Image (cartoon, rainbow, N blue to C red; front, side):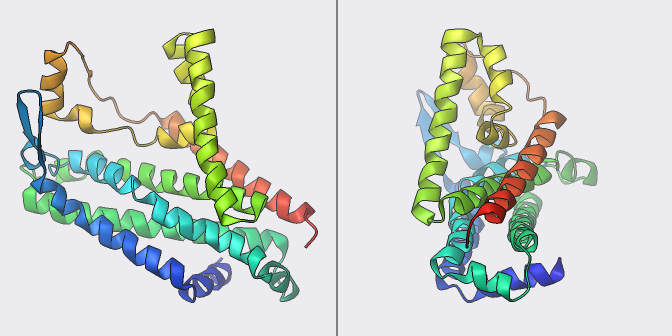
Length: 277
């Protein structure tokens, strides 16, 4: 594994666009602290995010991973470039000639995806810990380290998205096509859910079925945290909307995504295995 990962790290290290996107991602991720200065009005209610406890433990684990997820596109471009450049520069065949098997070639990509996801997760952990210790009203160890399951959920969501994009990269061999079809796939799943919800079943059954869709299952790992804020609950009562109590992330969500990741990797290998290079 170390040998395969070092090969991918060497390629990314000498790819200028990847380095720019990588740095941009972590610079933007570091700017989460600026959210504390945001103020806005919803009706007659003025909301100052810093006063809503967004940096309180353990809520910060949910909020920061959710915010960081919006920046995933930067890393997704690195992932798709990592795969499609192999075809553009005709280095796939060269890697195989140099001794890599097709299985090792695909696994080298996957190991890099896992490493990239882990680095991003550790960075979110560090940022959250610094902000939490600086702004949180609750700093006892028991509170700090509760709800940290959002970090593995964030890691798994990144790995799931990256694995899906890697699969599209092997399938289409072009960055634009791969990213474009990824967006199309999101729309397709939305259309299927709408058909299930409005034509075939009720909301509960449609939601259960759609939870097994590839992208939707990955997305469900990080539900939005805004409805957990006190201001959101107050607003909800005013408009007659009960957001209810957040009950965590079901363990089956993790299992479904793990299965999809295995499927994406297996299909990537199958495509490469059958393709004439």
